[in-house]
Image (cartoon, rainbow, N blue to C red; front, side, top):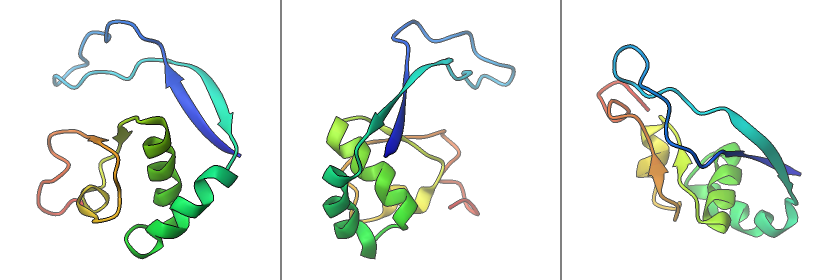
Length: 95
């Protein structure tokens, strides 16, 4: 099974010190069967790490943004999902 955490659909909380928004609390987790994602994970094997491929495949399947600070993952040719990241994630020395 692959777990997906979902968040409440409320207004974002006030920004933490430094202007970076705090994460909203998790409401619950949904378990998803891995079988429907396995073929897509296999297709991504040459472009991203296996553990990243599971998250990418799940984000693609659910049409969600994938939150990451991994600039290499965001630049990879295989993923078809959108990415959500911090503005400094593509700074030199990251990813």
